[in-house]
Length: 120
Image (cartoon, rainbow, N blue to C red):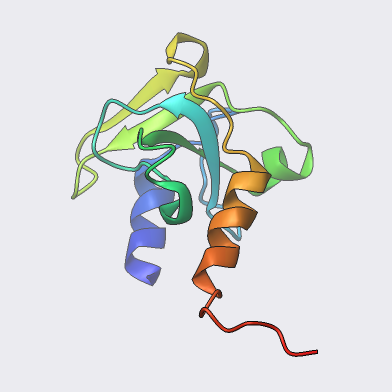
């Protein structure tokens, strides 16, 4: 894990202020409700993948921008060895519906439904 953290810090800039990530203690990945048309990095929620199948874009923010609650201007794309990093303006990406909390809670409850009726 440390290897990927260092690669991100060395090759990716903050998607809000466009500054370096070198001094950030954390790699702050922000999941956007925007369509990612690239391979890496993207996110989804495995619990509701059937209902929300589209890959979602990711933004990486420095600690300062997280603490100041700055919104990302860009989503980031990179290849496996980080030799190619591309920034996509968030405003130019296709909107996706927000994943509803109720859908996640319903899917999560099904994970723990073992078909046993409650006693009493």
